[in-house]
Structure formats: C-alpha cells, structure tokens
Amino acid sequence: MTWLVWRQHRQQALAAAIAMLALALFLVPTGRQMHAAFDDLGLRSCLPGAGPSEALPSDDGCTSLSEQFSGRFQGLATTSLLLLFLPVVAGMFWGAPLVAREVEHGTHRLVWTQGVTRLRWATVKLALVGGGVVLVAAAYALLVGWWVAPLNDATGYRFTWLFFDQQGPVLVGYALFAFALGVLAGTLTRKVLPAMAITLGGFLATRVAVALLLRPSFLPSQRRVYPTVSGPAAEPNQLAGDWVISRAVYSAQGVKLTPGSGSQALCDQATAPSCVAKYGVGSYNQELFQPADRFWLFQGIETALFVVLAAVLLLLAVRLVRRRIA
Amino acid sequence: MSGAPAALEATGLGKRYGRTWALRDCSLALPQGRIAALVGPNGAGKTTLLHLAVGLLAPTAGAIRVLGGTPGRDPALLARVGFVAQDAPLYGDLTVAEHLTMGGRLNPRFDQALARDRLGRLGIPLDRRVGTLSGGQRAQVALAMALAKRPQLLLLDEPVASLDPLARREFLQALMGSVAEQGLTVLLSSHLLADLERVCDYLLVLQASRVQVLGPVDDLLDRHKLLVGPRRDPDRIAGVAAVVRATHTGRQSTLLVRTDGPVRDPAMAVADVTLEDLVLAYLADPSAGTLPGPAAPASDPLEART
Image (cartoon, rainbow over the protein chains, first blue to last red):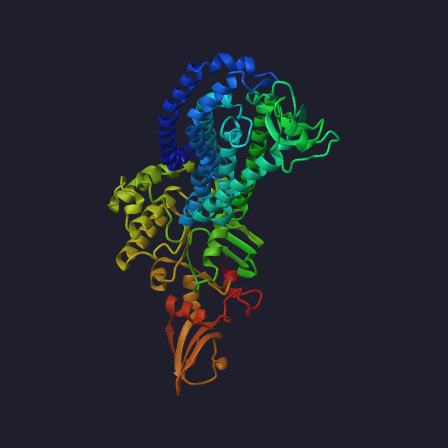
C-alpha cells in the first residue's frame, strides 16, 4: 500500500515542495527586512517595557515607533492576508480527488479488488496523505510564525481576526480539516470538480462561523472600564496584544450611549467640555476583551476543534468507502 | 463437485438501487473448474452480479458465497479472486511495470514472472505508461494482472468488448491457455455469443434481473433441438418438454424446444442448436426458462443434475 500511495501522490508532494519553496523565496527576504527594521527602530528594546502595562500615555514614543513600523510594512501585512486561503488548497487538491478521481476513472474497481480490503486501503491512504498534509502545514506554520513575529509585536494585533488565523498551530487544524472535508465531499459526489467546489465553500463557511461565532466566547471575555475624561490622555495599551471584542461609551448611570461595538471617547483636560457635553458627567468607556496571554490557549482550542471535526469527517468518509461505493 | 465449495453460490440474492432491483431472487451455484458465460441484455444485472461476487457491492437481500467465503471483507479471499472490471480500468499515468509492482505489493501470491512473460509474448512494452496503450493492450495488461494473482476464480466483465475480432480471438485463446495451466474457474460476461460458444462450457443467462438459464453447455445443447416441420400444435410431439420459441410461416413451423427424451416425429426435421440460437430464443421470451425463471417450477431436472 505504502508504495502505491507514494507512487500516486509523489507529484502532489513535489508540487507542495515547490510551492513551499516559492513561498519561502517571498517570505524569507521580506521577513529578514522586517526583523532588521524591528531591531533598527529600537522596537525590540522599547516594547517589552511598554507591553504589559495596562494603560500608557499616547506619546510614550514606543507607540509612534510602532506606527512608523506598521506604516512601512502595511503593504506586506495586507498581502499576507492572501495566505489565509492557503490551507483550503490541501482540501481541494489533495482531499477532493483522493476517492473521487478513483471513482471517476473506474480504478477503484481495480484497486479495491486486489488482495487488500477497502478499509485498509482507506486507512493507509488517509494516514499517509493526511500525515503529509500535517507535515506541510506545520512547516508552513513555522515559516509564517517567524515571518509575522515583528508585525505581531509592533502592532499588538496577533490576537485579532485575520492575524490570529494566519499563524500558529491552527494552520495545521485548518489544513487537516480542509483535507478531510475534501475527502468526504469526493466520496459523496464521486466527482472531482463538484467535490473541490464543496470543499471551498464548506471550508470558508466553517472558518467564518467558528471565527465570528465561537472563537470570541471560547472563554468568558473580560471587562475593562476607563473614563472618557482623564488627566494625561490614557487609553488601554494597544500594544499589549489584547483582543478587543467590543467597546462602547456608557453614561454614569450605565446606559450604553454609542451604537455598535467599536466606539470610544477620549478627552484630555482641554477637550473635556466636548466629552461632557456629549456624554454627560462621569461617562466611561467599557471594553470586552480576551487578554493577550490567552493567545496560545485559544490557538489550542481552535486547533483541537478543527482536528476533531476533521477526524469525524474522515471517519464518515471511511464508512462510505467501505459500504456504499462500487 | 463433492467436497469443494461452489466457485460461486447465491441464494435469494438481490441488489436494489433506490427503488429499482438490479438483481432479484437470484439463486445459483457455479461449480469449480468451469468457464462460464454470463449472458443477458443490457441492464439485466450482469455487472451487478459480478460486483457482488467480488465484494464491490453488498447484497440488499439474500447471500452470496465465493469459494466458500463471503466476498469483500476478507483480504485472503480477495487475493483468491481475480477481477477485470468493464473497460479494464488501470492507472493511466502508471507504467505497465508499475502496475505489476502494485499487484505484487497488494497480493500475497502475485506471480511477477507469469505476468511479465505473458506481456512479453504479447509484445506489450513494460516501460510504457498505460495511458498510451491501445484498448486491446490495456485489456491484456488487466488480464495479466488478474491472472498473476493466481486466483481460483476469475471474474471478467465484458473483457473483449473493446477488442477487434482478431485481438478478441487472441485474448480468448490466451485466457483458455491460462485456464488450462492454472485450473481455475472463470465467469465471463459478454454480448458476443459466437465467441463464448468457442470458450465456455457453462451458461448463465440473466434476464430482467433474474436467472433465466443455468447449466453446462453440453447438457443444454443436448437437451434443446430445433424442429422444422408442418404447422401444428407443438404440445403433442413426443419428447418435447417445452417450446422455448416458435416461429410460424404459412405452412411451416420452426420450433426451438427443450426435450425430455428423443424426439420421434416423422413429420419434423430435428436439428442441433447452437449456443447462439439457444440464448437468443430464451432472451426473446423472458417467461421461458430452465430455472429458476419466474414462470418455471421450483426444481428443474437440468439444475438438479449439475
């Protein structure tokens, strides 16, 4: 079996290696640039001091350095969002054809009538190709993790949407899930192209649903309150890396004054009258957030969620292969 | 037949797709050591029966046993059954030699030398990718792989459909040669009755999802006669058990009959039938059968004798 799996999938393995190499050719030089700039600007020495503090004055110097850094590499940060879609490739090009192409070409009738049961064929094939997916995704996650580190530290965004999704072990979970979804879709449709389409749609829908609906409440969020009017303007330290889920202005009586979940009001002594006029005396800002030190915990929870989903889909696919197809 | 299990044995076997029965109430026993022809119109259930026998499908009703075991779940049984599916599917981007390697990796008794020798004699280059071979060459590669498993039962689904007449004859000769060497049982579906007559010694006719005719070819040919004579009521001819098919012109009747003794009627000219005559006569009349056809009694002398 192992020989056959390698023979059938070596081209995919080669394609994956070439793609990784091409990606490295882009990520390594730009990553080195970012790491160098990070050191040159002095962010490395300034951030650890500013990082953990709850609030900091807006002119502490580190903030402006950080703005300088993210301004310079904003293009790269935006480009890197394209990489968000990468894990679905494992599902579309490795998962979907795994069973569907055999059925399309009729070769399942050849390989399932050799001296190996379908169960063994399916388990060996899924284990080896799935193992390949995990290896490639892990290598990719390490590379991107190194690349994105300066952006993380300089902006404090790594816990927020899109940044959380493009680094860390979740990438392995996403890739494995996409692979399993592709295998199951191909087993159900028995056609490669529809299976690829279902994989793409199903992957995006699941990812969006988990990120928007489940992730914010993996653990109860924490609450932080700070006044709208303060002495030297002081807002929560953005660079600390907390994931702010919602933020609004409340009156002294605790009535929510701003619509939606993204407003805050900050006045210093000079502008205080405008804040008071607008929100009354004693108004305050309230944030719901997930603290930065839960980043790896959340990565772990989301990875586990997608790995479990993948396992369920793969079990279903094996059942179908054993019972349904001829 | 005593002691050895039937090569293929079905009892009340049925397979349903959605609401349609592809095969129904199928009971049969194919003894070992035969080359059996599986004949029937399109959609009669031939492919379904073969897929059930090799374990690609699971029965909806009844049971099927192959070489004494239940097909599909047992790798040892899979290794003892050779199968070439319709259109001889192979991996187009693997070479012939790689297919043989695959066969060797997946089957415990795979005979590389046998396969290489066969393909060498047929002039099929081992280093060619299978996708570049002709349809006939692919069929030969698929057969070589199936034979190299050294199976006890070989199931072939329309193996000669894609071949020209010459290649067809060569293919069937090669098959017979291997059967003689290896002493295996073959069940072979085809529409080409003339070809089957040359090769097969056992006949299984499927019609409308049911078994219509089953028995050794010699017996069947012995027991069926073609009678030509003046037009008359066939029931009163001595020795005629049933009329399978009757065609009449103004004054003359041509009857294909199943006999239960010598036909003694001076008015009738008695002639032997060919396998093709016999099969076509039965296919033309779905209600006729030498069992277990729908209109036939529960126990037929022909079947009882096998």
